[in-house]
Amino acid sequence: MNLTKAQALAILEYTLDQRLASNRAPLFIGAHTNLYTDAVVEQNTTAQDRRDVIEQFVAYALSKPQVRFVTGAGIINWLRNPVALGAGAGCTPETDAQFCSRLGKNCGTVTGTDNCGASRTVSSCGTCTSPQTCGRGGVLNVCGSPTNGDKTEGGTASGTGTACNSTNENVTKAHDNLMTSGNFTKWCVTSAPTSTSPISTMYDVSGTTAFAINKYTITTANDVAGRDPKSWTLQGCQGSCTVGSSTGWTTLDTRTSQFAGAARFQTNTYTFTNGTAYQEYRLRFTANNGDTSKFQLAEIQMFVGSCTTQKFCSCLGKNCGTVTANDNCGNSRTVSSCGTCTSPQTCGGGGTANVCGSTSCTTETDAQFCSRLGKNCGTVTANDNCGKSRTVSSCGTCTSPQRAEVAARRTFVAEAPAPAVPPLRATRSLKLDGHLQSFTSTFRKRRASMVSPPVAAPAAFTAATSRRPIPRGARRHGSTCRIVPD
Image (cartoon, rainbow, N blue to C red; front, side, top):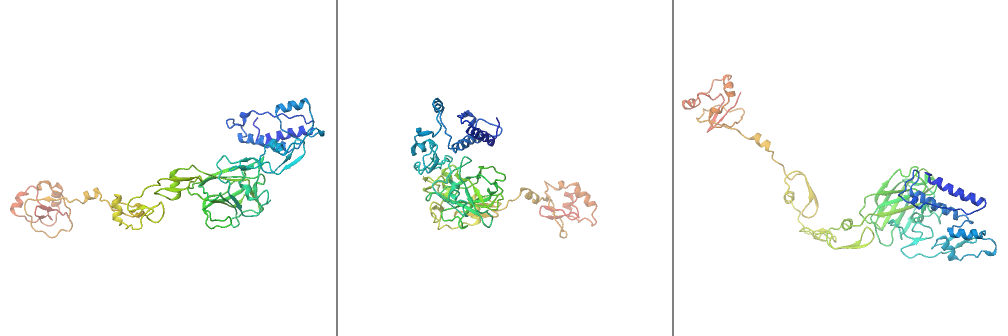
């Protein structure tokens, strides 16, 4: 029908109210169960919304002393001999156990209407067996434990600020798993958080257990959206911190501008990276969404990721030997080997158990560092021979082949000795492949333009170079002839 959650609930409640105000004839309720599964998609509601409508309507109906939920067979039997609830002396009050059983409660104090329409309070409908606790599965006065892995179980919650109601709205209500419109509690404080006067809640997990929390949820309360959390930090501590002190806390996650325009009982999920197991976690709120007098929320839940051996060793900062400790899921675990050490280091040799190290390690030089790593140029960062991180800005430089080729000297070879000439101003060396026949025409042209007369050469030299005279400025050194043009 594409009704919203609010519309569907309003129709059911209105129909019941009309029936109670008229002839009180039985109200039959039927539902197609498949409509309440995630496989069915409706335009204006989710499957969870549709399930919430049923739960909230049942809670609303049971708040009426004159309402009972019965089976179809029970209705038929009643129709054969209709009798008003609690009418005359024919009603036999049920026992407390029957009262609790009929209401589906098995723990804690329960107040409701008995089978004869009279109000009754039973001080205890039963007790729960560990690890279950009363209401922890998300249903009031029913034993249970979360099925979603929430780690805020069995520990201790504390908070700053003054509770709006010390009994029903204290900080423990932020961790009781009651967070739906038909079944909720809330933590409410009589002041608004600021950056200078934050409001905090700390959860200390049971005993010395620690978890590597990397996901958490926050659920808004039933009313006044301005009281919803807006900005906060999530912090962890190894077990020595207090909720009101900033000493010892490690910030893990920071959020700002959250829950703007949020719905009532809206749950937001936040994930972050964390590999360290902490015993205490604190949410430190520094702003709400505008209310100047109060702050509130319905629920806080915390979760961990999967547990693996690799994360176990690295989270504990161990890299060698056998390690026994609690993993990030809170379970005791023994890993036979977190790794091995490279000589001269040994496991625990540096003074820290299950960490590679050495007390007598002689640090290598930068040249030895580069050589051991097989590096001969550029900046190099790695662990040195003592296991410490080191950065060497230059392990050497390279000789470019192109530069070597440019610097190569080319020589010319002459067969006859050259006369002495004044010292040369500059030198360019060229390679002569064979005899002076390899001189290019460039030098012949330059000879014609020379101002000074050519240097006289011995007859033997002149005869050997009659076709390619040696230009002015040529100087013979053994079998090498160097040419310097003007």
